[in-house]
Image 1 (tube, one colour):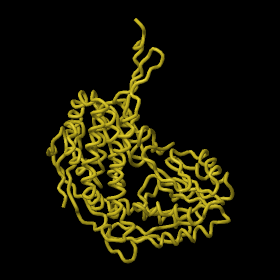
Image 2 (cartoon, helix red, strand yellow):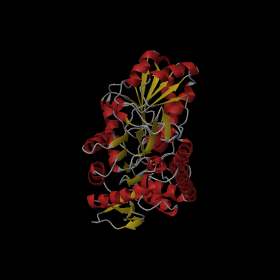
Image 3 (cartoon, one colour):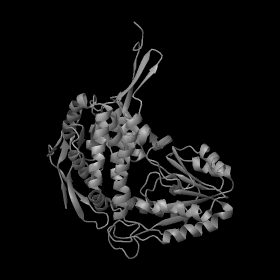
Image 4 (cartoon, one colour):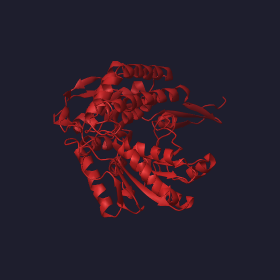
Length: 477
């Protein structure tokens, strides 16, 4: 059992003002694996005051000082990578190899990307006689999700520190344990007191207190679109910057000249990795009608080879979804797909037959889906793929863009210029051509109801900066 019932505020582990313990449940066993305490407005205020006090000096540090700080954090994170991955696996169910190498590894990757951006970023430029400066925005409230917990913590904390900001982090109460290990890493790396603060809690209490707090200059939020709307409304009264990375229902367009087997396999696998709990997952597969039956057959074969089970067992390729609430939501949407007439190709309701405990979802594929069906409109956030036939390229683009979301898009083609042309027409923040992997130095974020602002690399660093014009700075005397 992990006992993480203290908060990290002003460089020290402190008890909550009014302790309210919460058990953290393993989604693989449905048994408690740890405990945290849920914070209050008092705890948030204490953390924000610490961050505000620390900002006065930390905002004035040099580029070289912040480079040295990020380097120390990376070094300590590398040392603690196995432990970080094990905690992630315990609290949200990712297979251990994925949790160590990809989940925890992504945390280091974001610090390295922020370090690279910091080394070359132009914080000042001359425009005629004016100096344009980019300065740290101030105290930042960071609200992070449970699906890729360290990934989302690191891709906010790293650029915030690189910019010279101070932060208060509220991790998800569903998967908060790795945030405490992360705080221990920052403590060991000698992050100055008050620069990084951690307060656990739920959205309606701690999240709202951060969003409303007059001394918080910026909120960076990752989560559902519904919750993101509420955060923005609460932040509006103090006119603070709100950067959001929200939901997605990304289309994967397979063109008729693509390598069909490779494209379909490349589209199914991301729906199984991390149990489909990725905002940018290619959850709508669009296939030419003439190739549709073969594509459905390939997708079924790939999904049925998935090894589901104990995240700690060797050979497991997919663990549970992160919570009972998530399991129940997915089950309800699978049932909705059946009720609305989609053809269930494989998977379906309930756990896999051999599993009697844990929030395990069958890898599920629906065919004969129309884009008006609920399962094609709503973000399911589980290992559920919908397959939609189309007649021509124009129709494929229309279907892909027919969504309130715009986080990612995917195009597969044997002709690179043709793929590029389709990519230009997609209304989404990130387009992957022929299975191209994510690039941590490239901007991550979406159009429409998938959010605003960008994370990762140079664009992520910009989010934490204000722009100041100093007129007359270069005037001759």
